[in-house]
Length: 150
Image (cartoon, rainbow, N blue to C red; front, side, top):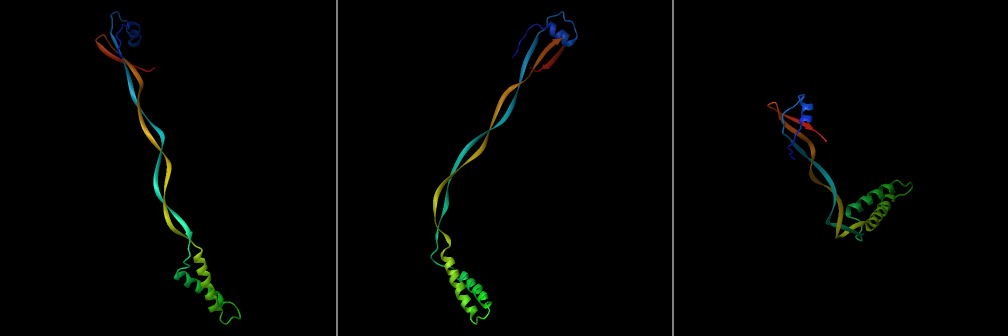
């Protein structure tokens, strides 16, 4: 805003001079830009493959059967007084491994499912706010500017 008016009292107190002349002054308001980050929530959804689990009826793999036979044979060989304990233990270990393989949970397929989640994002907002004002005047051939705040 610009105002033109007589300021003999204000100017004489600011400059230390008693003014007998009429002085024109201009007042200018100054603004600054203030930027803020305002949070908001956005929901995003996407289709994902979700595994479907079921029981395996195939039994254990060859590697699992061999591992079961070796462990069973080692245990059977350590039974005191058994002549064929290793062979019997190998058979028992193979059977146990095969049954364990039948009861395993395996992925039998997939289904498409929409999954959503909330994400916090930020919006930048700028506002013009009052900063200060200045009075500019000329007195005695010199131009002066005084800055003031509300």
